[in-house]
Image 1 (cartoon, one colour):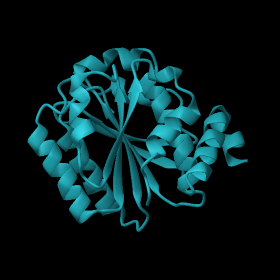
Image 2: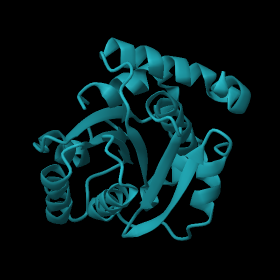
Image 3: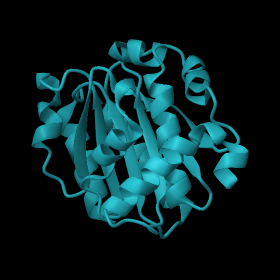
Image 4: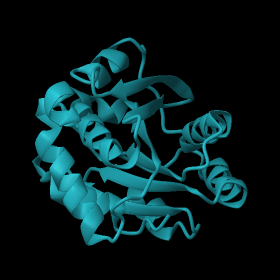
Length: 214
């Protein structure tokens, strides 16, 4: 009812998220949902065609199932941390596009900047709920060692924070070998393909939730 009255456009995605959670035996799970968005220069087409905004809405619909506050903390990164924002049921339409437009130049791909921001925010939140981080990227980290160190450190210090990587682009791209080879317990990846907007909500949620066991 809350979705229908506050964010009717998310109703379909909300139901798809509920169905996928049930399929994965995760119904009733409580968690904070985070969204990380890549702002490297190669991401420009995915902002232009609405793929980034659509992923934001799917993340929010999932959060509405997992978090009584139904809020998604959004982190934008490129060469460094570019900015942060929030998605709520009352404020989500065009929000990703608006936030992105206000962040200036797009840079490179520094995963560790985003991971460190997520961990800091999670620590400050004081929550005891686990966190599901939907981490979108279209390539490998420019600096692999800091990326791996930040994820390994997060796994050690905050095992309840899970990074579910969503890769936009050609699944055969060698850039995604980094994600394929990641062996930390707190990560998984889903190759969303070159046209992620064409995925159904169910396909997206099944990819994001496949390996998450809070």
